[in-house]
Image 1 (cartoon, each protein chain N blue to C red):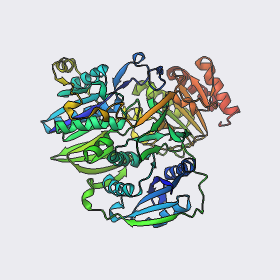
Image 2 (cartoon, rainbow over the protein chains, first blue to last red):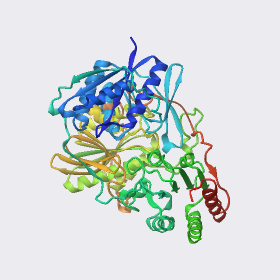
Image 3 (tube, one colour):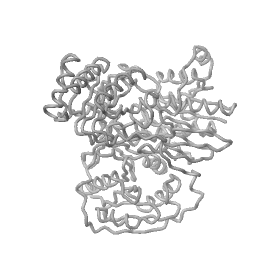
Image 4 (spheres, rainbow over the protein chains, first blue to last red):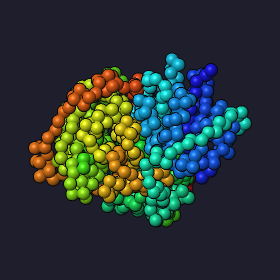
Length: 330
Length: 263
């Protein structure tokens, strides 16, 4: 009997998260290539309908793990239940979307098997019957072809949006295996867990037609405010920023674009002095036209851009503002 | 109370990376090195917790060759009390699991109640060593900590979530926290701090002194292998606009209007 490739499914507000479907699609593909059975695990409280949904979407078997203590996410409860499941199922591979939950959870489990996680893989190739994962170290300046040659189970997390999920079936005849986790409350170490919006204020860039975003390359807060602020004002654009700008307090957190901030899909996006770390790029993939200005011609942002200008934003941005101003006046 | 802060020395963010002859590493002599950015926030967090409590010890630890001594000197100059340098060749070039084993042994030997790490290194960027470490130590942990305070033996943790949300909870010590960049302002090092750092102890324990077998450490103890590295293949989509700033700006808007039709 074929061994398993297991996907840990995340869900939120009664829906399966898209990244988990991408992971399921990859599990099905690797399953065909490596002769493994694509299976899934879903944890929660009252998730039978979701489990059936996963089975229809292409998992041969879905382990539906139910417990009152799995109602909200904690690594204690989820980790304990998954560890028990992995000991039982003994999959060859465990896949998960490279979500914040995966990063908060998966290494805690993999460590117990003596295994690291091939994290944030942006691609996979089969070479000599072995999956070779493509990771992006050094802030995506390089691609590293990475393999795990340790014993099963092996673990990998997948970059959001890097693997297509559109070829999943709609009426796959997978089966659901429901089981109780029988968790003891003592496994939960986090107490008084509360989730809230990061700030009281909200800046909704998701509906902006044009978004102007700046990065670390502006050097200081005054220059950032003067140059990016003026350009955004002239264009009537929303103003955004990459993480280093927020960390340096040049702009409040609600302007952050990327995995820990907002996802935007404007008609036109300006990435000014933004290198293009993947945490930023995942937030802008829906933009129709991306203009990148960066002094480093090898900056990864140019891989995402429609138009690129290699140069110093301090020189180029005033010119862009000038032309935008002329255009506005005409 | 003992706080262990694990740091890493990485190439500076603007470094031009040149692949080495093996194709699976970079030429180390061609880059300048700095303390990994999130790790500086982890150091700051450790120092603030010690200061708030009014007693205790902050120990900086790194795995790395001789050059990494400089990262420990920066940590000591910021105010750490002492440092541990895992410099033995058997510790080097490990995958996150091999590194976590070495750091777990240090945390165990030091009986550190709290272990802090940066959330992710700017080089390999696996972003999991702190959580593997927590798994090995069987301690509670949190990934992407953006706020922390300590009341008695209870940590109040704020953790970053996706889509501008955050999660708060309490954790009992001993614990492991992965610290996100931006958690607080990192202090500048004073000349006095730099002078004082020179007198602070830096020890270099061997694997045997930590009770570790070399088969489980460094490159020998690693399951993950990088077969090769290469620059990303360029998407041909990007149209580069040349010329001096004024010309380039004019051409860009012309293309946005005429070709992309966004204006």
